[in-house]
Image (cartoon, rainbow, N blue to C red):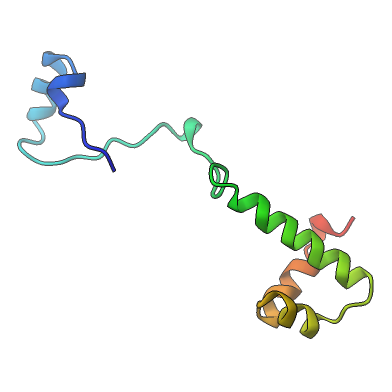
Length: 91
């Protein structure tokens, strides 16, 4: 996390108002919820997992067993069950 001096980015009157509540402490000001990104959106991790899950569902539809898929992908049997039995992705 990068820190920024308040005096470099905030007007003096706002700093004076904040100092009524906090002095000499580090405070975190979060982003607005509207600017949050979903997990993995920036790194591409989410897309990789979605592609892996699609491949698992396809292999399952083609007759691969859940224990075999778990072994092939290094996942637990329960995780593979969650992937192949998700209702929204069964189309």
